[in-house]
Length: 189
Length: 287
Image (tube, rainbow over all chains, first blue to last red):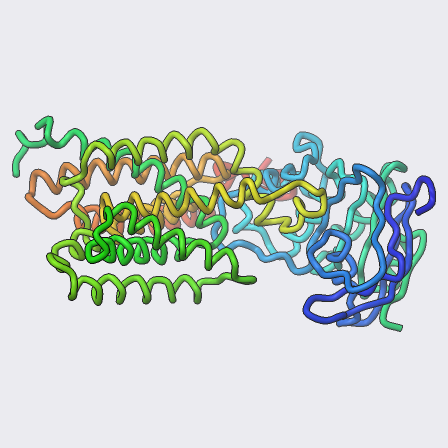
């Protein structure tokens, strides 16, 4: 692993009971927004899960800088049917500053989760990760369910991200990746 | 029984045992509901009842049998890669049939089975109170530490793993607390009354108020209020305590309907600000 890198995947083959994706090789430096593109079922989410430890690495190595902190926004988060947790409480769960949230989520900070729409829930989960102090943010299909205003807000935060941090973003929307990422890696090709 | 018995020193230990359990079980029920595991409580209660019943032919204390069976069920549950309500339903079936089948062979089995399934709070002893008090202090003392960890597990399942923070301390402790609650609740109150305290208060509390901590407090308050009402009702009307508590909790669930009606009326009248979820355009429009 080169000096300054936050994370390096070296010929990683990952999956669950059997390999799903790989070998994949990439590294990420602070300040970068790395996109991972590919068709449905190509194993994009499995790569993110191999980084957090939720999926199995069959071969290759994942190297991470000492003390690296991460947050991981999951694809298709399940909206709890009846949970009185407020949007603001979820937003602050990973350490984001609850008193200073992005403007778009302010109206839903005091709204219980079960009264949020799928898009609002997706947005608050995504921003909880992006606005947390984690140095590496993993985002899995963050544009799902988001309307134009929410996409604009997400774009603004991605462009203003602190240079000491980095983002790995999985999406099947190549145009979104090309617009916001410093590099794009294709898997399953 | 009558109102004089209500203040009889004989009933102090049962009353305070039940009160400790009402607080602890209502609070643990909030965690179970947040994790969508509330059916696990009934499964563990039924298994604890079967273990308690099995202790009779084995010649061991009921508490040890109940704890042993619940411990075994918790270990099996933890070893499974994915646990859902189907597994919890299976625990219920195994526990229920096990209690009754073993009870048909054990001496006084039907009496013990009745006590474990239906509950008999009035016959609790000082060690029931001691166990329930320890559970209560444990749950209250650990709440601040446990709550954010369990919430992170719920919404960001790989947070601890990704950040190399060991999750086993809070996972094991939480499993032990749920198990202890199911066992102490079952042997003190009965399987169904204990399950009712784990299930109903948070079901009401989560729709009555907004905010995690406030809804947990509301759940505990509902659990305690219904428990005290059931204790008084059972004494004054000479009713069995377990069914009286379960029935009152089921009746209290109608508060959900009142809450829903109140919210709908407020939404129709446009005064949504009481629930703090006005969007900025709507707020501006009101001005």
